[in-house]
Image (cartoon, rainbow, N blue to C red):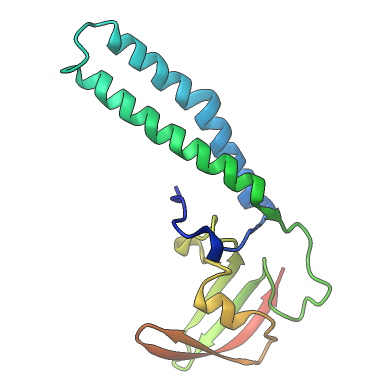
Length: 164
């Protein structure tokens, strides 16, 4: 689960249709299923009497605050997102939503999809459009060399393939 972003001014508002669906489903789940369950549990714990030493009550209230915080974030973020649901006119270049295969100087091949900051997932190869790698890849074509600035120095890659 992604956390709210502390600096909203530097993040892109773009999201794939799949990412938007995922966030919408999370919001619906929290609002319609999880929050009512926790509210019921808190009410039951409160009925037991002394709330000051009631662990179920205290934990339930904490859970409600976390759920409400996430609901507020998701509601606000979904209102400002721009769903990118079409491929670009020039599919020979890397743009938002592209799957890109790159090769480093040692012959290692990496496969990434450029997505919005709300849906990045390193395990699936989804990188944020705001990341240094994605910024270096944008508008590149197959065969082009890409230099990426990293905290430990620069790295060089060649774009092998682009698909949408």
